[in-house]
Image 1 (cartoon, rainbow, N blue to C red):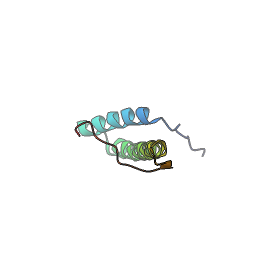
Image 2 (image 1 turned 120 degrees about the vertical axis):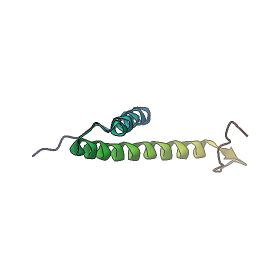
Image 3 (image 1 turned 45 degrees about the vertical axis):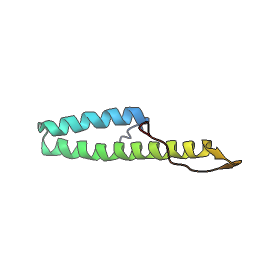
Image 4 (image 1 turned 180 degrees about the horizontal axis):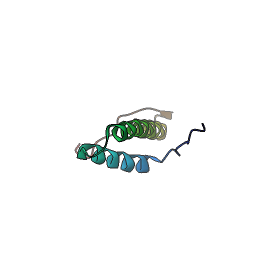
Length: 80
């Protein structure tokens, strides 16, 4: 049996799909089997989002330069 591979979405698409899955699961209208499939897909999407955030963080760290050396600094929130 050939397993269908699902294309890895970009961060925004993964997050949007994850939000839809959560709404669907919270509605309580899915069968157990559908809920399990949704949960599995949600885990995959969560991992995709986490990877996207890690990559973005690494890119930000590379862009911060201090005293001619790249230094990782925490991002300032808009409240500060």
